[in-house]
Length: 167
Image (cartoon, rainbow, N blue to C red; front, side):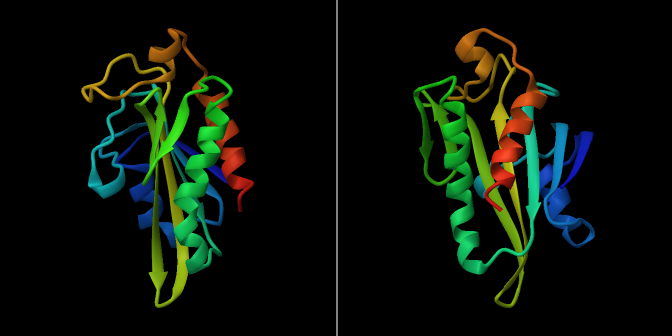
């Protein structure tokens, strides 16, 4: 496992996808801020600097069949982890993680293929932790749900370990 943290990136997802061949299996890229963070269908991912988890994980040696299952599998893994704080945590297809019906996070999986072979897949996840306001009215965070500040790195590390265990 290789862990890289950058204070600012365009997007953890884009960076790992662009330089996929240069990084080994299970490279993790985490950032304090993304200038062009995105979610599914090129939707913008809103995040204040150093307030949320913005992370992508590169996995290699994945079959085409497994590729189609990863997004849901990772989303459910994160949902189950969050249930220790929030019993009303749910997964909404295709990639939303909700607490009490409000979006607290999401998972995106993008891959590079060559013919029928998967070169690699990048699993990105964003999780709203300490952000206290959002432009998107249906968003929430750990802080908004509890009025407490949480340690980003501890939660990020716990989730990374759970995701890596899947591979």
